Length: 79
Image 1: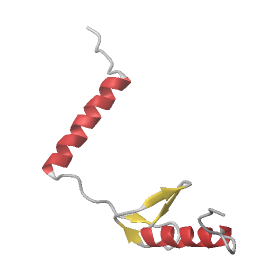
Image 2: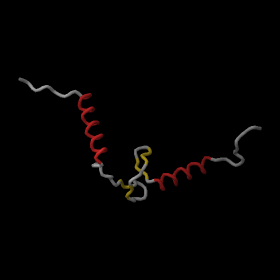
Image 3: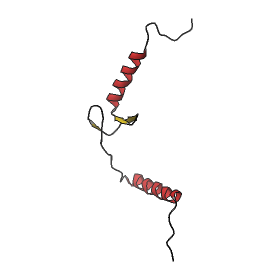
Image 4: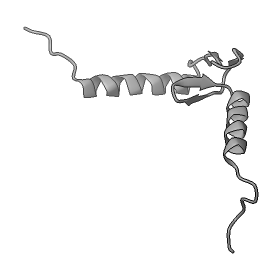
């Protein structure tokens, strides 16, 4: 008798159930990720445009982008 192949939907469901069990058991270990800008290893990160950034580097980039785009006299409007 030929063995039945698992469908993509069944495989995804099996994977989700396995990950849920691991999370409940606390078996999922935190993985350290290296920031692509400063090289620091962190638990929490953001992925922006395919790059992994730590919170500090992300905040720094956001600040740089905001100040470069701001204009003198820019306000809330209402004039």
